[in-house]
Length: 209
Image (cartoon, rainbow, N blue to C red; front, side, top):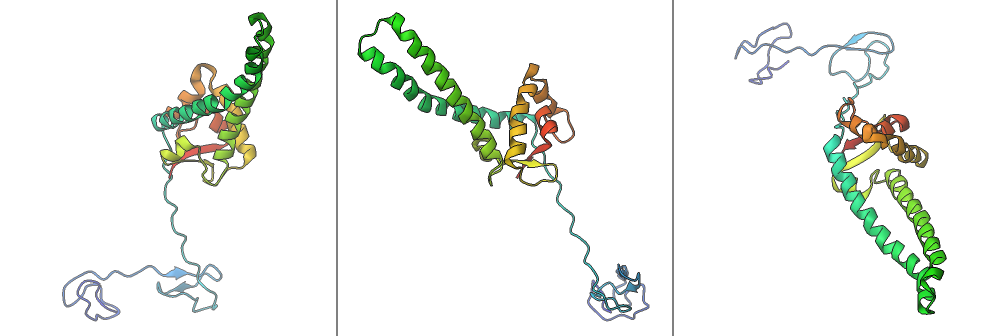
């Protein structure tokens, strides 16, 4: 046995190094999980039954939950992205339906059906695209929308794993409940794991990468 401070050899029974006075640190024995025999700390195989000694599992790092303000910033970024998408994709729908009638000189009163139809169609398309944007992005390998990814956030289940499309759907539609007086979103600031009502319903977390 050697001293951990000066490196000189010391006796097996010594409690202090005779050369530098450093206390001898004796590692705790490793108990065999199969027979319970106490083995030397450096042993990898039990000296009694010959079974391998399992190494102690490495502690998992604590997860850093994303708080209210950083999630609000991510939502703001996503709102900009979604709004741009609505303009880019919605405008052609309105033009395609309404332009032929305008070009033919249809009376303004006659344009109403085209306007109503274009607005309804654009609303349906935009709702579907926003739904797919959030659910596909958060259940993808990114585990995040573009706004969350820019702020290094990720959506996980309670075990820290990637969520599936079904859970992402539950999380998305539960935001309707969170939006009632915004109480479900305000909950993020006060819950232990920074979960909103929609997170609690879907069993999800938003964490920092």
